[in-house]
Length: 82
Image (cartoon, rainbow, N blue to C red; front, side, top):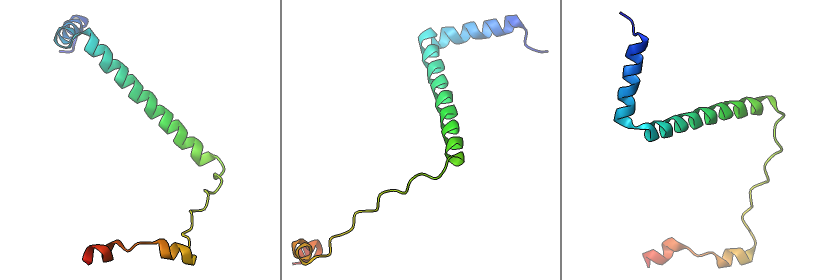
């Protein structure tokens, strides 16, 4: 009680009638793009583990601690409480 070729052809014709060829083409291209993106992501992930560690990131910008910077700061909470 398996599917024969004629069953599959009838099934495909019904699907084409319901969805239309344009929608099926869009679904196919979207699915193909997703598979390609997944493969590229897997390829990138495996390359990163085998490569040497990347150069360290630039140090974070330090907060100015001089007196002029302290004078320029505004305490927002103090303004809203008053």
